[in-house]
Amino acid sequence: MLGKFLAIVLIASGLAAGAGMYYLQVYGYYEDVEATPGEDVVLLPLGQDSPKPIAYENFQAIDASSAPIRYRACFTTRLRPEELAQLFQVSEQKHPRNAPPWFDCFDAEAIGAALEAGSATAFISVKNIEFGVDRIVAVTDQGNGYIWHELNACGEKAYDGTVVGETCPERP
Image 1 (tube, rainbow, N blue to C red):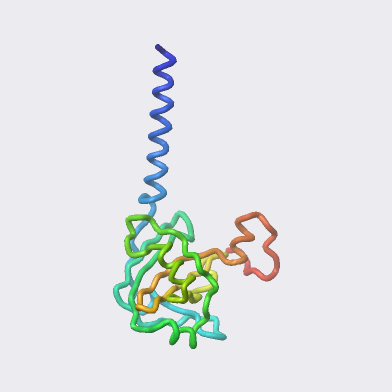
Image 2: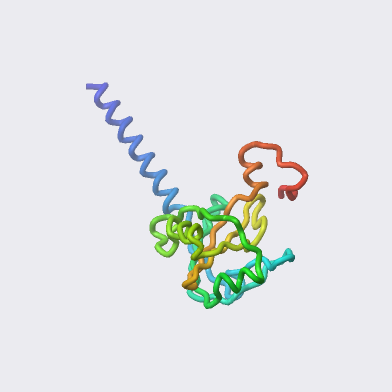
């Protein structure tokens, strides 16, 4: 009898811990980002180090303080990728990170497919927004825009334990 009781307690504890972990990963740490007109969507001009804002509407974003790569945003713009590519640095990034399922506007699989198909273009927004993390902006031919954070070469080295080297900025 005692063995059955202990087994039930262990199974219930495991299920509760799993449910708690799922909630914290998918819902717990995320917060809505308050829009700051003229500052939310910026791109890095060719040959420059300071990003410049672009025209956008319908901005919505989420972020979490628990990790620097949890930022996701969606917006619309009248600017087309071809126009932007003549003025701003294009990124080779083709695979955005997934967003929580409840953040409906950001479908990483569809964005990645559009980037692969050439109906969207990714741009560098801000380099090292946090150590080892770049902000990427993708704009589709239909004027939909998406923003996410991605590890850059320094971030990948820093987080996998490889020696970072002299080409990376100092850690804060």
